[in-house]
Structures are given as C-alpha cells and as structure tokens.
Image (tube, rainbow, N blue to C red):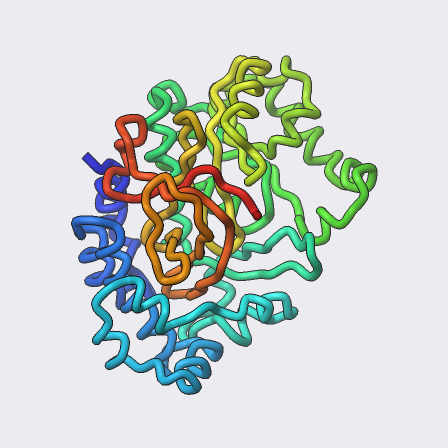
Length: 364
C-alpha cells in the first residue's frame, strides 16, 4: 500500500484544496496521483504545469520567452511520450534570475498569482545573493503530507497528539509547512523562526551571536517538556546539551552532509529518534529513512528527483547526477542539483511504494 498517495488523496478532498489557480489543476492532479508509477504520473503533471507556464495569458515571463525562443508549444508538449523527452524539451531553468531582488516576481511568477497569497522561501546564500521563490498553501500541504507519511511509518504518532511541534527554521514557507504538519499530527505548532539571509556568510562567532536568541528559545521550550517533534540542523544538535531533549520524542534534522552513521551516533548520544530531511528552498521537503544508508522520498508531484545521465536512465544502486524538478502552478524549475543513487522503495520504506527515492546524497 502506498500510504503517501492515499494520504494525498484524502488531503486533496478538503473543500479548500483546489481553490484559486489550483482549481485548473484538479483533473491532472487526480490523474497524476492515480497513476501506476511516479514517472507516468509525473509526465501527466509536468505537461499540465509546463503548458500553464508557457501560456501568454497565464504563464511566467521566463517560460513564455523561453518557449518562444526554443519552439516549446502545447502541441510539442502533447506529442511527448515519456518523461525523458519532456525534460529534454523543456531544458534547464536559469535559476540565477532568482538572485535578483524581485527575480521570482519578475521572471517566474505566473500572471494570475500574487505574493500576498504565498509564502517566501530562500536559499542559504552561501555563494552570493540568496535565491528566493514563493509557494502556495497547496504545495506546502503536499510537503507536509510527505513528512506526515514518513514520520508515521517510523514512529507511533498517536503519542504525539496534543504535544508541541517546535519548528526552528526560516521565516515563511518553512513555518507554514510545519503548521500544516502539526495540524495533520494533531499537535500544537510552536514557531521558532529566523531570517537566513547572509547567515552562512558569517564567521562562526558572528553566526553564533545572531542565532543566540533562536538557540535560547529552543532550549527554553525543550526544557518545558511535552515536545513531540523538534526540528534542528545537525550542527545545532552538536552544540546543545543532551539533557534539554529529555521531554522530546522526535528530532527532525536536515542537511546533505548527514549520513547513516552520523545519524545513529547522534541518536545514541541523545537517546531520541532522529528522522532525516532533505530540504530545498525551491522544492519542498523529502522525508528520509535510515536503511543502511539514508533514503529520501520527495514530495511527489510538486517536487521530483529526476535522474538521467548522458541520455541513459541509471540502474537502481547506480550513482548519478540528479535534476530537481519543481512543478507547481506557482513555480516551474528544472535544474541540475546533487549526486545520488536511484533507490527503489523497500519493506522498510513501503509507505512510498512505487515512488523512487534517492540515497548516498552528495554535492559532488
């Protein structure tokens, strides 16, 4: 049973899910999540999203101009028979435009959307100006369902009911996503938000000074007990005394530098369940499972990890470059991202049956 798809179907039946521009995508969305496998479903979904973004009446400036220059038309999109051909037809995006002050609004935001109805998400800005995009509540809800499914598969969530979900993370989309997750788990959301702009460019001492109020709030709340889930970067966990986690059930950690051994060592040190996340400012959360290695599953279909190297789809257990496809009514991005091993769902990860995951994640 694919519990993730089952949970998405249940969530998308909510009366407020297909409101606004998302209403146009009700039919392709339902066909997508009813497909036999994620690649067939992604073909249906990406076709619908791409046609919306290249449409001169509804689309985004970047994709309208790219379609005109490269001969990408509805007819060409409809002719495509597989995901490989569609990704090749669309090509990579120019995400450097998102570093501009109004890059998302001026280039990537479709005409019928407004920033006031969406939530901001930015990259860390490690290599220069941060890239910024915006997400709708629907896309963030799908991401929350992804996390809910993965957490429920690894932990008896009934014990989390009415406890606090403490979300230490960026202002905007991250916090909104965790509000949705708290709602799904029947928990009390407690935000601990901070501005990430320029944070990673600071010296360790400057970063510690800037993060001091966040750390103090985190420690204070954890010491009160009754925290069901706390979120943290692995670096933050290393700096905190294990005693503060005494009244916490689960710690959700993120970072591409995390491996299974590191996770297990930290679990042993803290005596708590750690669940890894593969976060991305543009695509949304991918939940992780520790199965000899860490296996991540993306928030299909709004985030998809596509793997095809030199015109060939890698075999399972083969490491190859990945592309991140962000396919939302409010945002279409296709970019080269990390290196990873294509991984099939297993008995351990059966909640994501028929959705391929990735493991052995690395930046190079």
